[in-house]
Image 1 (spheres, rainbow, N blue to C red):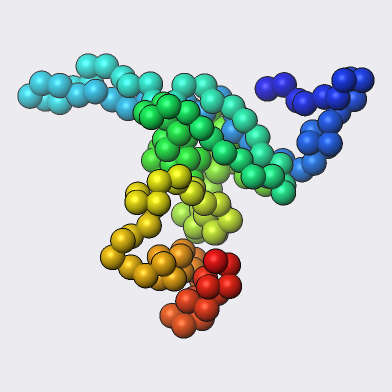
Image 2 (image 1 turned 60 degrees about the vertical axis):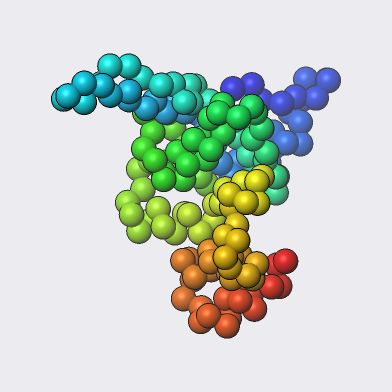
Length: 154
């Protein structure tokens, strides 16, 4: 991965900031099974050698054509699906080495936000309840406290 530099060759301000997340050579292949025994006949290369980093204080958008692997990258980073190979560091710690307790703590600080509100928000729930859902999973706050906190951030 190439570090950003200024025109005079010195490190850019982006390169000087602390890396919050670093993805190195991330690969995710899905098996294609066929036949009575459901043996693997081929592999779909959903994500193939993806690398990037995000510094503290930055917002990152992953864009691409439909079906190019954006969601798979996010789900693999959060370990919602297993990776094939590669490395994901969050605050210098390898995400793929975390036990279930540490993984749950890490997920409190990470989130995928999908562009399509119809796939990311439940139309059966009021917006306050939809947003406070993450607080229900990741905190021990009461229902009213979660709802109040979620409204503060809207």
